[in-house]
Length: 139
Image (cartoon, rainbow, N blue to C red; front, side, top):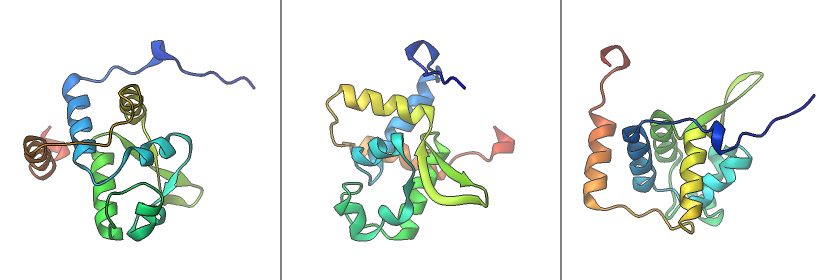
């Protein structure tokens, strides 16, 4: 069996607003770039992100409860950056990058892996996007 690697020509083109919203969500998240870098090559379990393990692994800036981390990860799923891992039994507590997440990670790597920075305006827009989104049947 042969495998193919996708290159820049195979990249999915996302609308500018989709990319902007995803980048804003990531910058406003409590996560650090190392989490995305690790998710590119392996699934990352929720347990390795929570409490002091998240800080020790370089994934978070401060300890996060399981509920908080799960909520933040679910928002990153909603904006298209992450997906939940599935095994033979169904959903797991592990996460991986989507193609959009990979594209943003490549952008951050090209910028020298800056720690995610966001201003007040980003937080306001992110909160509005997160809390005032339309149900799927209205879109």
